[in-house]
Amino acid sequence: MIPRLKDQYDKSIVENLMKKFSLKNKLMVPKVLKVVLNMGLGADANDKKIIQNCIEDISLISGQKPVVTRFKKSISNFKTRKGSTAGVKVTLRKKKMYEFIDRLVNIALPRIKDFRGLSSKGFDNHGNFSFGVKEHIIFPEINFDKVDRIRGMDITIVTNGRDKKVTLALLQEMNFPFIKDRKVN
Image (cartoon, rainbow, N blue to C red; front, side):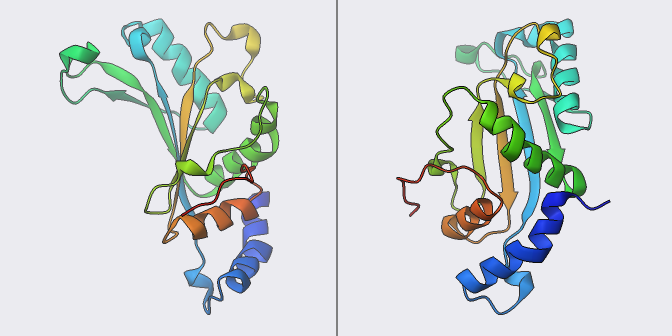
């Protein structure tokens, strides 16, 4: 079964972006390549039970098992040791990616307390968008009673858009709630 957002992308978003940017070919329209979810553990990285809880939470949110990330080198100021656990991450592609974006935009983001919209400062020069979520419990898959501690997570949406303006238009077509005041350079 085709995810709802993928179907919407194929039928209407591609046509809207072709008209907006006067593109001649459908292949020139930007698309989302992957979504990366990252949860850093900080001081809790040494506790195996906490790592297991984070793995279970990210698995519920994303629908696939995350990878445990490790530090590449020791830095004394950050109290990190080479090879010790840094956090967990998962990369979503294809159907799971579209299903996650749909749940994120329509269910999770509106559940954030005092949410006014996403800042458009999260774009890099290659057309990717990154933002952080302070509470991972905004996702309905997480049972609030079983959570030992509320953790934040970073979400990166990787696109093949050539610049910030094109990527912003793509994400706005996908109903991402951006703050209206700011302009993207």
